[in-house]
Length: 290
Image (tube, rainbow, N blue to C red):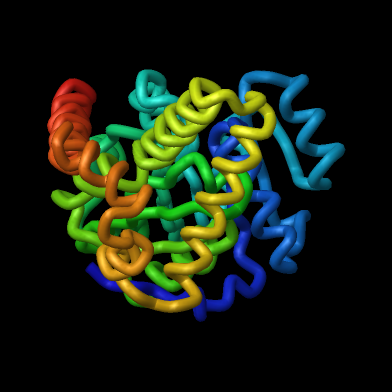
């Protein structure tokens, strides 16, 4: 695992998004907000309506022909649903000719080897180096530019290529580099993690309502409490275990609650749930291997 800093300039790179879904749009918006020239961004999608909307809101170049926009690219971001990835990869193969293109995939469950099998089949090893492949596991807070992405590289990714990818991904949050085999764990923690937090919020609001609070007040109290707790960890730079112990007075209300969590093995259940998510991530990858 490596923490990466977005210190690689993109300069005049042309970035093309294949797929105009929410994640692609968020990434494009994040780049523009950080000063990247919108006219250096291209996006393709079957939906003319979607492209018209994004062209108007972001002032980017759009086209519903994937190969047309990919030909212009220095960086191709594959942002399509896993089930249509084989058709997209097959369509883009003729684009891989002389000019170098960095391939970044944010498609869930598609391993690097799948992309290599399509793109490298007709290329010798020297030519393959012109098309490095990077697999990324972002999470849904990326949609509001507060995301966490795990990133894995294939053997053809140079230091410069890696820097370019980090600079792009940092537009929607933080990035950490992992070996690809660790991405199932990344998926279980940060990929599925927002849903765990939403589940906790649901539970705390329900508890507040059961104790007699108005639902809106219970929601406000819950959300503010979670934000404050995260801010405390970031500000004080102490572990959650230490902070929990500090606010758990012997014989107090918090201790009474924690005792119930311990009796119900809540912590063990969370770990078990994450293990199940990681296992399912492996299964999905195997199902998607072509």
